[in-house]
Length: 129
Image (cartoon, rainbow, N blue to C red; front, side, top):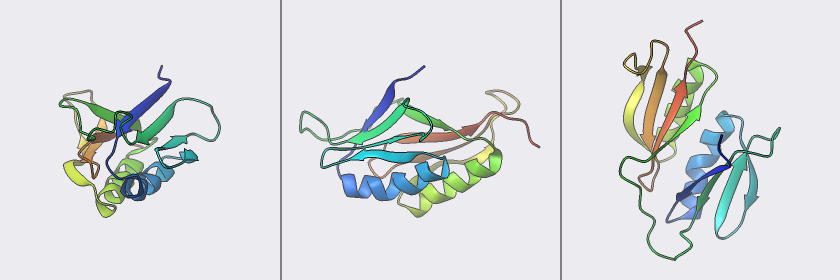
């Protein structure tokens, strides 16, 4: 469905310290990293891509109001692990791991903000084992 998702950041080194362990837990690896952006993908496929970048207009990086990127986790334990990794690498909690039955009965998710304030979700849609 998606070609890529891009988030603006103010500091690429700080973003890398935050995203690299989080995305590695989800099986994503760095495809490209330079002085403007870092791009991750699943090593087994060409798309979709996840990018963090310094804004191309050289203006400040700002999170969108109502904007969120949700990463798919294969099981609930991975949601828990990713939430912990995000908090340990400079993220802030926006909602502890848990069921969100108002979305659907098996929705298990956690919410964080990256060091630049971008809202992220890690979600599992599978029933409990």
